[in-house]
Each structure stands twice: as structure tokens, then as C-alpha cells.
Length: 161
Image (cartoon, rainbow, N blue to C red):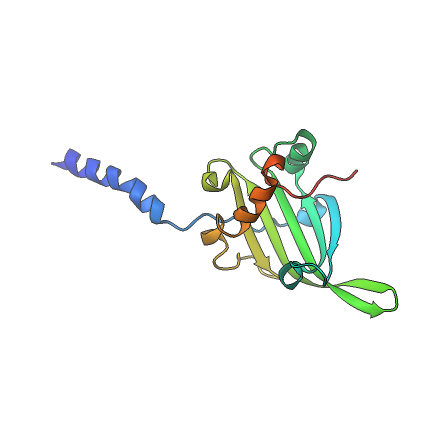
């Protein structure tokens, strides 16, 4: 009788796991000490301006640097997209303003198998807890967009030396 109960419990485990919320990457403390990959500016003319407008700085940990160089990112690669407001100072000067949010991509083939090995999170300025809903909809929000860069292992940016 006990063995039969154990089999039923073990058989139900995959169903319970399927109902669990999608995992979410943690906030990568110290990322500004990593390698700065590039900086870009999304201006008011761009369709992405409302959500991602401003200066964005991309940082890569050592594993992500290896991925940039080799064309495939290994497990443990972490990329950070640090977004700041663009402030018109008048004349020809646009300056970096307040932080808007921090986006994180983590390569972990087992943990994020449903999204080709990449996990995504977005943190509001000053927060260390991911914004609600991002992890639960990674496949339809973040990863759906990143599939356009599938040939580059789902990463849009390139390493600039």
C-alpha cells in the first residue's frame, strides 16, 4: 500500500511542476563592474521609445564575454541592459537622466529550457525584485522578441572592442 501511494505521488510531481511559475533571474549585484559592451540611445522617433527610450548600457559577465567571442553563449552567461532617461539640456546637449529600469538575461539551459535556455527579468529603478508578470510571460514577451536574433543565440548586441 505504501509503495502504491509513493508511485502516485511521484507520478503527480511533473504536473505540479508544470503549474509552478516560470523561474526568474536574480538581480545581478555588482554588474557595473563587469565589462561594458556598448551604449545606445533610443530616441523619440523609435517605436520602442515609450518603454525603452533613453540611454542603454549593456554589461556582460565573463561567461557572456566568451559567448560574444565564440558566437554561442554558455550556461552562466549574464547580460544586463541598464536603461536611463535621455534629458534634453538645450542646444546640442542630451544628457543621461534617472535610471528607468534594469533588464537581465541569464543563460541556463536547464532552468530556462522553455525559452531556448535564456531567462529574462526586468527590475524597476532601485528594485531588487523582478517586475511582476515578466517571468510568467517570458515566452510571449521577452523571448518572442529575442527570437528575431536566434542566429546570434538570441542576443541583439555585439561586443565592441
